[in-house]
Image (cartoon, rainbow, N blue to C red):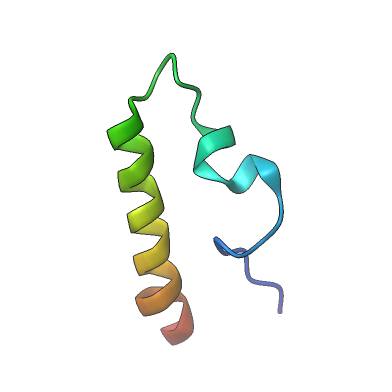
Length: 47
């Protein structure tokens, strides 16, 4: 089973590349990183 996570090396899955600066602020990108880190730690292991 292949699980996508923040540790994947796909550029388009990283928040810096996924969300363009013209639509998101730096704070929103930081929040997306925190959410992804939480999901990888708390949700995906229980899936």
